Image 1 (cartoon, rainbow, N blue to C red):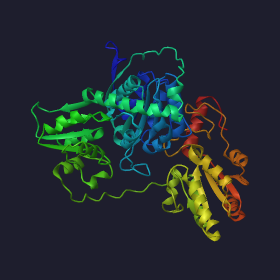
Image 2: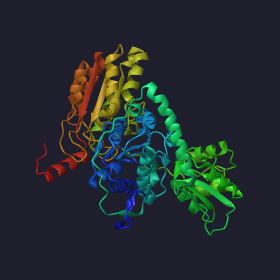
Image 3: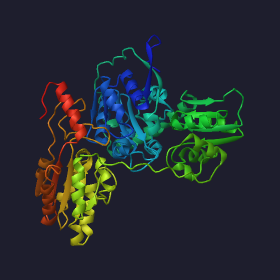
Image 4: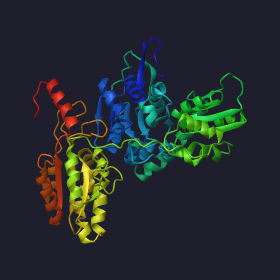
Length: 543
């Protein structure tokens, strides 16, 4: 590694993959870390902040990406983190940033969620590296999460491109021993912006040559991939094995336990592919199997390159890879898997202010266009008061679409339910759409404001009036935004303190035929306790 110091002290620590990335970011002298909280990536930015890094939660992933990109344009090292669906939100700047390149190092952590432990889909974000034309690294454990983060910054600066670091739920949250540096990171020279209009302003005249530079850059990285130490062959006892496994990331750990005597080509740089190195490995063994979690993507790439490789059955494309699944893939076992035991479904906390809201939504027979957050649990018993949930911010647009086309008697029952953090994330544009293209029956937006981003660990957001480090800032007022946008009827209620008042407000809004926003505001009990603890620490009384 270019900034490694052989005399530097090291320390062994037990770290999760997320924590390891944060430690590496500190050691890499990252000037700014940005992100939006989303399991399983959340702890990266939180740990980076706790370690003394300059970190911030952005309103959404697109903004976080753009802030980090600006820092990288200015020559600084920048880290931006998000879960897999967050990269969908940031995809617009991602694809063009692949054209512009970067000045300083920029690493984008995309944390996939195979098995959907806390997500609405299990998309495979390896596709993004291929589609955008950027390199991707995939660590197998916490040590590699640390090492690959450092390498990602070096590669970013070496080739002038952002680098995707793809992790998964297992590599993010599993803890392994990591050797980290304990010395002071190298200090950067004073940053200075170098004007480069041809590379940074993507009008068509500049974007066309930038696209050619992108393809040339990827050719250079492909040549680098063939010889770099990120792609490693393991032959066990040194003899040529009969079974060879091509794998990457946490899949390597499962495959190694399933077949310890096999030969392995473990890909750390998973895009662009070192096809010739893979070809040499595949032809050196009698049988070559690709073991990968998620889509049959790597195997498809290798077959397209003319390599004779085996891969998994479709049944193993769903959920997380396990050691047992790796063994079944190697055996060609196509038999149905055992039905997993049913676990107790999650529930809204006792005393949660959302409970009263969903009780009344159900009692009034509302058609509820829902959203992403802990309040999504309103779809489950005993409430069963949510009809749709697609992605962050979709509640308002989906609700408007239903209002536009349903018969009046049904349309008047439609309510868009969205949380406070989600409203800031991507509800604002839906609100503008509501005012710009109002349905004939009006519409009702219900903002469930519990004063935190509860689902991912009680993070702050612009509506809480506190930054990540809990320092106070101006609080974004949802009701003021609604009024200034032109929403005709805006009301703030406490659904738990006065259920009758909340039911009255909702019933009147539904029957009014107007554009309405109801802010159901009551702090999350768990978040409120944390806020009080912070206020006591600061020597202030609770408000």
